[in-house]
Image (cartoon, rainbow, N blue to C red; front, side, top):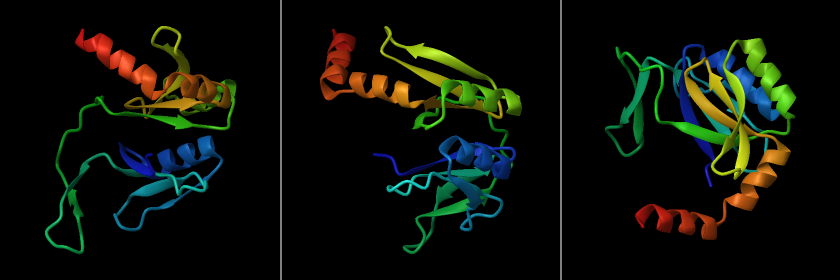
Length: 159
């Protein structure tokens, strides 16, 4: 189970507010790191997405009290990466797609695998892909995402 994750953004405050809207949660500054924000789901698991400025990196910390430090970087972040997350939302597909349209971010409904389940790809700032699953899509995903199915996929991949 994933309790929280972090993503980079050009406008962390705005991105955190949009993610909070998709969760019917709230956004707030993420005080451990300057200029970072968090989207809080408000669920019973403490689920959040931390949103950091895109030109910063997390690096190993130097002491026992701090396991990571927030290092300012002069990095050129690639527009895309292999990172993505699938996230539940209570909103309908039309509502998620409308938020993407309003923000000017690519939002498209996709079917994964051989009709395994549907997702809405929402490309945060047209850079970081998050898959949002409506209640109906969550049911599809949960029906598909069983240990048995994953074992069968692994066996087929090694055959």
